[in-house]
Image (cartoon, rainbow, N blue to C red):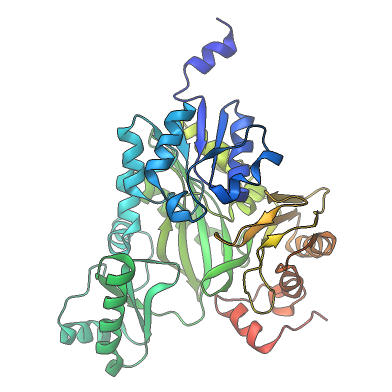
Length: 463
């Protein structure tokens, strides 16, 4: 037996089913091929029609166009894994990536879920349980009790007085900006609790609520973590994701500008310790609000993030390759991650949508031209003639740049955006160009409300 054959025989899996679509499916495929692992794609009927041009034989079809009957159909995905001979499943982001029941179903079927244990997904998916775990690990949290709100409004009112106004009431099982209300006066408490509890019951199937201090002008800063099953856990830099519209990120950058290095190191270390305490495995992201020089934990995403490339660029790592290696049982080397960020990176999410109204813009792409060159990366699945379906998220590409300084990265992104051409459909490329010429954004002085404000008032060009 050759050395290569012996190495493969020790692997837990040699085939990975990619349970996702679009650019992230292509991203995972590249990582699999880099490690000599066979990737197998799946597709809905809508996506399968486009696949033969990209992949000989096409992917395994898992159902009709709607996500509920295809990419979210656990039985269909499991069947595809069995048919393909896959030993592991990579969920990408979205869809089934943070579904604890799916992770358990894979384990019962003898397959490896390339992600954290189901127990960790459940703990961090419940906002109350997550906050309690973070408090236990010493991670700084937004002021407020780490317990569900009682039914008695009078007790809730007293709790609110102790926290101080303004405050925010959130659904324990919420996310993506849903199931939350800001309360600025004491006489608003009763109605806010009643409406948010009913919304939580309908949207998430659980009425539990919790309450925290509302921060007026915070930034959104994330810490990337990577953990293995041998007790090793590291944080891999931080990034700023403050530029958002309706709680959806538009532009991300790494590292987050203007953060004290000692504060960042201390916060990152607490995130790594929290991972060890909850038995986390794989990659994950701790999301914080940052205001007045302090971090406040809000939630953890137990999966690969859309914006992971900016961290890869500045940390000099391939996070998806590390995901696969950790799933194979390999240990990470903490010393290899103990180095400062190199340069600065930005990511623009290019969406098939009208740049002014934000209405989705499905249809046939007649021409695609992306920039190339040093410091430029494009993650995408589109090509000339590709038809953007109307059934899924509008993200069609991610344009990433990396340069020695933030100012140089901004200039490089301007050039990259100017060289990008996507014809046949509307995209948000004009919006990105406005952002990268806006004087406050260039100075790094933006909070989570900034983009919404600029969209209402208009952008200011840099002098």
